[in-house]
Image (cartoon, rainbow, N blue to C red; front, side):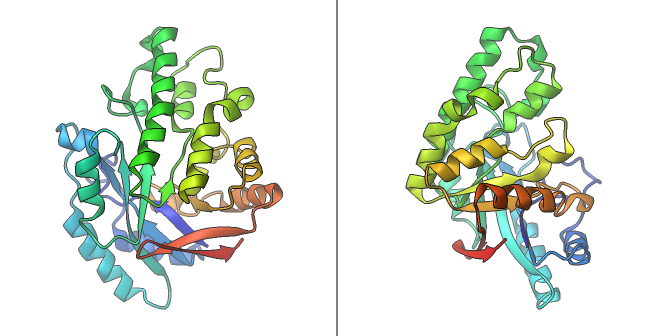
Length: 275
């Protein structure tokens, strides 16, 4: 099985001196029985170009991934990737970044809306209901813009803000993914299918307060009903202990929905393997 969403010590959201080297991640992946991992460190383009985050050391990542590819050849498929976030805010620069390295896989993600740098670092509880409802609506609209930008392979953790709305104590169960998820995400799921992108099953929620994959089972059922068949699985591990975490539960859920295959990538070419 391939873990298509992992982060090394180079990711901007991992404090300096913490996290794992790429080599350490690879050794752990082998120990856990994974067939391959993609190193997809964060490139939150708005925060980096605005000076909020340090720039990603892409050259060091590329060098260490190439070293790992050679060292672990025949034992582990090591993929050179990137998680390119908020491309809608700087589409020209995002395209330049996507084309700057011979990536195997590019994750398209959205961690925020313009004017803030991440749902996880924003004090949502101090907002009025009108404010946090407006931010949610903007998030959904921005995701359509990310899809229109389109220089990525996998759309990641589409219900990302929900986990922080829960953590920050937003009342009234907002956004109500359980009952209104299909209404919220129908345009996004249809666009993913129309454009031929892959939808990520992000297992990080199973080890967090949200308690479900991102997105949840009902949204995967809706995606399947709409004709979606392309699914990628990723742990979103920021430390080696989370590599491949909860893949068993997630793949059982996907199989119950009807999915038979998972996507993997090399040189940005998609292939499938049986769950």
